[in-house]
Each structure stands twice: as C-alpha cells, then as structure tokens.
Amino acid sequence: MKWGKDGNGSDYIEWAQTEGGYKRAWIKHLEKSDEKDWAGTQRYLLVVRCNDPGKPGGNPADFPIFYTEQESSDRQILLNFVNSVNSITGCLPSGD
Image 1 (tube, rainbow, N blue to C red):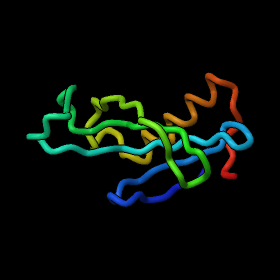
Image 2 (spheres, rainbow, N blue to C red):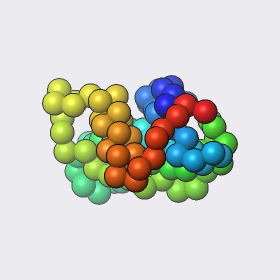
Image 3 (cartoon, rainbow, N blue to C red):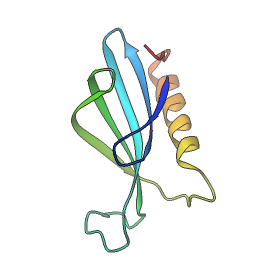
C-alpha cells in the first residue's frame, strides 16, 4: 500500500489487487452549498481503478461518510476501507 496526496491536497491510498491491477481510494470534502452533496454528509470516500500505479482511470464510485472528522480521520477511514475490502475479497495488498 502506498500513501500520497493528490492534486487537491487530499490523502489517498493506492494498492495492487493483482499484478497490474491497482486501486486508489481518497476522501473528498464538499462545501455545504455544493449541489453534488447528495447524501448531505460533506465527506465522501471515492474509489477508482488505476491503469498503472499513480494513474487513476475511469469513474470513481462514491460512498457518503456519516462519521465526523473528530470520530474518524480521513486516513483511518481509508485504511479501514482497504483492509475490509481486501479481507472480503481475499486480496493481499502490496505497494507495487
């Protein structure tokens, strides 16, 4: 697994699910007035495949986060997400 910051300053985590098959997850923060805040949480977990390490591709799936930042930090949510998904799918993540 590899941590980084994207062009918007958001923390992300990227990991290899298979040889040549990568995923990236990050937290997006929205303003109160943002019309794209469909769940009214202002914070969303986004996940997308990567064609190569460091090169996200396709449309991300978004999941609203109902915890406040005081209850769970962005990095903790990302780590919990990756560990949960990999546990369910049987993937052993690597930072390739």
